[in-house]
Amino acid sequence: MKTISKTIFITFLILTQLISCKGPAGEDGMDGMDGADGADGNANVKVYRFQAPDWTSSNNMTLQIPDLTSEDVNFSVILVYVSFQSQKYRLLPVTDLNINGFGSGFNLFSQSDGISHHITIFISRTGAALPNPLPEMDFVKVAIIKPSESNNIVGNGRIANPKQTVLNELRDAGVDINDFNAVCEYYGIDTN
Image (cartoon, rainbow, N blue to C red; front, side, top):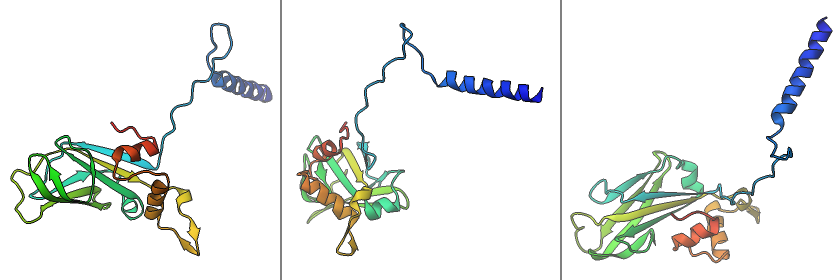
């Protein structure tokens, strides 16, 4: 009796698995066709977009990036682009930037901190005081490009600098890192 109950139970489990694994059939009783593959993504690249970020003090703004780690700061390429009053995106650092309505002579640079997960953008003016209020930014876009496993090439007994390997890959592919859209196009990232 115990053997019959065990056999019925095992048969029930097998049938349940076979029925639950089969997809729904079409009108003709045949299984449906597989869907089309999705677009290729790039797990090594993340882009963060900040619209009209505010200056947090007299000469800097802090952008919180929760995913930013100390490993990213040490090994990934972090590209920070800014846009003022519908000007094209500029890769930081920039010197003698001309900002519409404020003139020229602005320097901007960024500093990444993987401990408190933020990037700080600093602005200074050469030879004159900063305007008050500071010029508003339309957007800041941050691209964090992690090196792939294949980028850590050993050559002449040394491990290649991961950041430089990523930059060399972009250069060799003819990608101008000063052009935000070109970087995104190379990695298949939507620029919106």
